Image (cartoon, rainbow, N blue to C red; front, top):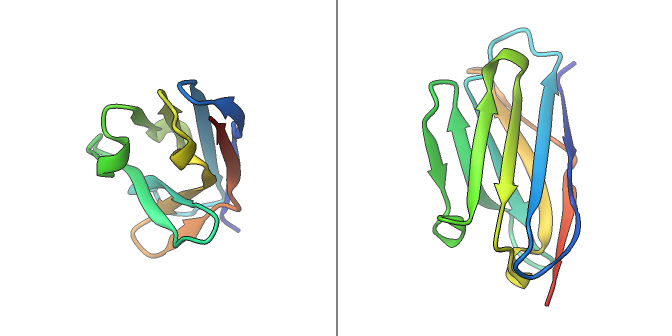
Length: 115
C-alpha cells in the first residue's frame, strides 16, 4: 500500500521560513514526479510546485522566487523550502506522487503564517 507522509508544517510569522518534507513508501513502481499542492480555507486546492525524477521543476507564479522544491530519487522523498512566507500562504499543504500509473496524495500538513 502506497503511503505519503508529510512533515514540517507549523506556525510562522510573515517573512519567516518553513521546510516541508514528504516520504513515499510502498510503491512497486518508480516515482516519476512529486509535487506539493495547497488548499486554503474556503478555496480550491491549487498547485504549488513539482519536480520530476529527471530534476525538472515547475512553480506556481505566486511562489516563484520564494519556494524551492527538491526531489530525492534514491529514497522517494521531496522537500519544499518556503522562504519569505506571507499570510496568504496559509493553507493545508498536500504531497503528491505519480508513478506512471496513478497518483497518490498525502493527508496534508497545516502551514499557518501570521501577520
